[in-house]
Length: 208
Image 1 (tube, rainbow, N blue to C red):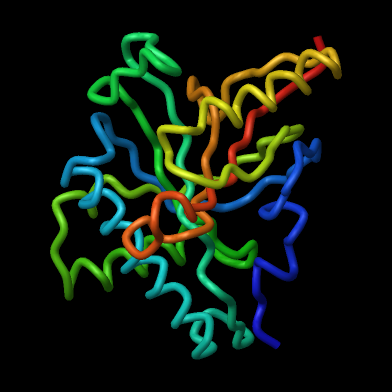
Image 2 (image 1 turned 90 degrees about the vertical axis):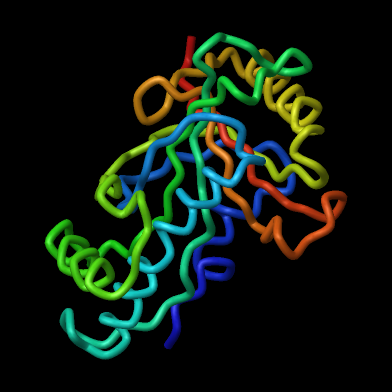
């Protein structure tokens, strides 16, 4: 049976209201970058992730890495901060720093990733293939909810999360190093009108 994250892991990805949960260690293909995500360079970073993810997916489906396994590719994710401390209405997009990623099934390993990357590099070109890394990360306790609408309107949804942080006597802590928060893109920005876009916004939290 095909593993579909929207059904099998609905609680992890489709929180319509602010929700607290604890996440285990998960595997990702990641790449870091800096600058305005509306510029072409961000698209080049994103484009480096997908060929390797699809190579791994097909290898699993064909049974090349053990028992055949079929799944829907996970949505694009990103963790974000800025190099100048700007936020909210004063956000300087040119100063954004990010790590974007695609989650991978638990049964895959760093060795599988290395082999898939080598196969892709022999067939395709992208200036950022060499910067792709395999990372296993346990985010632990998180607070999240879905934001619907343009990315520029996210501060209003983050404010809802901050209200829960205060009410539950929590504090937001960095994720994957020094990043402020995580975004998971449930719709494709290239094919979805901004007002219909859905993005899961997530804070890593701990008790005060």
